[in-house]
Length: 498
DNA sequence: GTTGAGCGTT
Image (cartoon, rainbow, N blue to C red):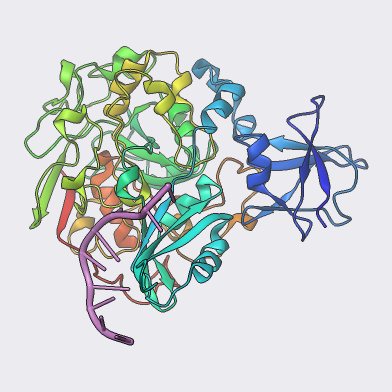
């Protein structure tokens, strides 16, 4: 017997009745279907007159102690918890939400299923990650024998991301979940990493982490060694990262400048950018302003680059992670599959948007968090500039947190600030939705403490990426017994900080 | 009732 719950976008708005589930919970997906971008619910406590948050566990909103009652519940949006000072981005909530409607889930292919696994079992397994809209096991039409793979579809992007983030022990076998080839290039990438210039030597990674944590969860801090007067800070929420770009902040009494994380280069030092400097985009750091040492700038337009990458390929098909023809976007094409240069890009569905720079770029910029916090399309720039900036933002490199890739040489550039258990513990700890329930109330927009913490953003942090992975093994994957099976591993290569 | 990288009878 499901009943209905009155939910309004905000106080004073017309409520909509939403059906609750049999267990009286309200599916976040149900909520999000009517209020795209919502990340939670709140209601006004009649006694204290204060707003109260509704418990959210694994995609289900749980009623207060005495049931839902008759009061009206209000949506909580990530945007609303953001600081106000990002108005320069002109990211209206409405626009953000509109964007989010485009954050559709994709079918996901599940590889490596045991022959005996049924669709029902498949569904049941993945339901611990969120609402499963579809589950199928591909079978031989004649014999009915499973082909050993299947497809699933989730109701929420977050669930999808969670599932893509790890391997799955299904019915006794490790299975891979990936974006199907047929869906390639349909998912977006987002930069979560910012460049912090004018750092002083006494700024430790923890200082930066502490400082920037007030804006959102910091998943990574990278400070090059030896001292180079800059750092990289990676946020869980890409929009937070974006919102900080162009700003000056005082840390330890020193004014530092935040800008887009620098672009990366391929081993030959070629530029990936389309030539439009990031600085042209507006408030972001202009060319040359962020690089204390002015390394040879491989960017188009001669913008100074903070650093570049060195790719070490250990066998396997070479190829840079960014195809020149793609204007800097990770293409995720077949040539890249399995290339550690973009380890989990494909798995995470974070692939390029070749058309981004051309037409309709803005609407293609979506948020893999599924929380709708990023709205690059609303930036006061034209799509081409956005695309150009993004090309240089150093997005795209997603490391594999499972710890089987980075160790063994990849961690040489990340002596500290990585592999922080506090930030890596989120994922892979339990299939049943790690820490959502424990997420601090204020952390809306961040699906739990460690959501996506495993993501290694940006090539800029190549060394850091590796380091993060290196820090993870054994500490963040209690459920992962031993190492990741080597199935499908084709090569090893590393990104090394230059 | 075998097999173990892959890619979906709509």
